[in-house]
Length: 216
Image (cartoon, rainbow, N blue to C red):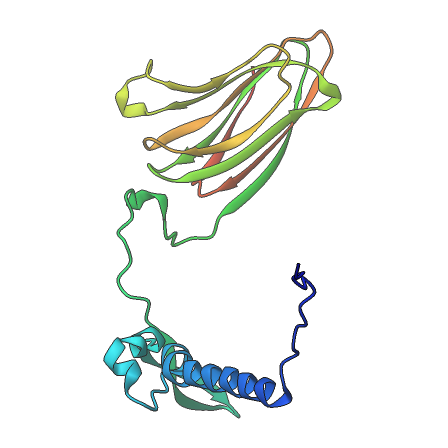
């Protein structure tokens, strides 16, 4: 009975075969570089294959030339600079989200002292569509009543819109406002404590002025 030998000898590749495989790999990489990478990445089409397949278009970046004026030694030097053209943008769904302002934004920090049960009104005068960012905080964490609202005089003396009113235990607030109409937009603060309170109000944005109606 003949026994099959299960231990088969594995012949190592010869040096010549390894050399052939290495050369074939290098040639393949060079072919890929010349036919695909150079046309697609750098617009270098040595064989015409990039133009035939459209790979050249991947490397094309349209530019426009603009003139820049430099001041060198008191003399104006005009030089041309290429800037990339990115095609036509998609129109904004709501163009009002961007506002190019002719004036710089203003900032104001106001300290408001209110005695027991005293109140005041601080109003920003805003054109329609103008924006403010605000924050206010009561020192020592004391609670106050507030009403953040807006008035438009031409709508009548009783007209106002409310943005936010006091919530129980609230002694600070922050946010932003885009004015829905021209008018006065701001806060009524009422000290509901038997002790004095100090409120720090910060406002930044494109307001025309800030009106302090004083203590009443």
